[in-house]
Length: 177
Length: 179
Image (cartoon, rainbow over all chains, first blue to last red; front, side, top):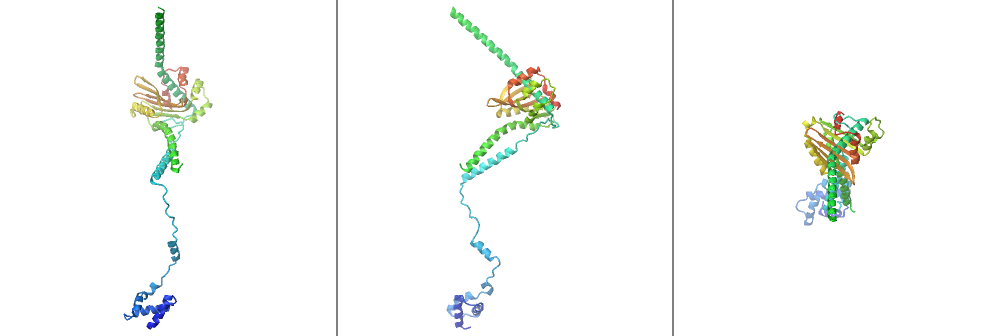
């Protein structure tokens, strides 16, 4: 291949109108040519001294998809943080209180049925009535035991009235005199 | 109002009401704590049971007086530590424990009776002038009794009961231990 041909092919190459074979010819020329190239062609030696495999990129089947993904990333943009730190702490605290409240609500002791101890048996209506009666009477008796001394306090008030009465009588007598 | 303010408000009001009821439960946990343990007799008569009393068939001669007093009750809890149990549990300690716990929450002392080595304490819980609960604690060297009467309680009615039935300070509760 003459230098002239090379120039023509290169012109075609940069126009983008070379066939694959013509490009191959060019590559062969540059790779086989020694240092006696004209200066203006030396600069192009690098361009045409690559291997075929490198110049023809092999596209895998996912290429288009990957390309689209790279060009048009569909990830949600990170939101602009609208809450400041203080509010976030408040919300966290409020949520914790809410959770604890709900927990307390559900962890209330179950409403047990009437049971008498030892064997945990259920009482019949009559037994329960009798038990209630006994408790009421017991409480009532104790209540009255406590009130017994109160009656004596009542006596004290009576006594106090008597004293006042006597005092008044004495005073009125003095006034008469 | 902002969201977090609402959350805080709701949760505070929620936890507030819960804590109040939780306080009474705290005292009632004493009953549950000792339920079924050796030496203890625990009885819990539920509001449901009191509803059933209305159509009870009994030949109890004191029925009228008793049912009058029962009508003001909604629930009864009883915890009795007998002399056997007092070997493992200290009755005086239990007495102090319950009494201190009750005074810390909304119970007020009504009267304290010291008779020999026996301490008797009445505590009440009032809600707008209505007595909602009466606690009776009896503690001595070898026994401890803890009674809680819940409902709408009239102390006059309660004290009139034993007078009308002509019972003197006999230990009525002893029979209860047979259940």
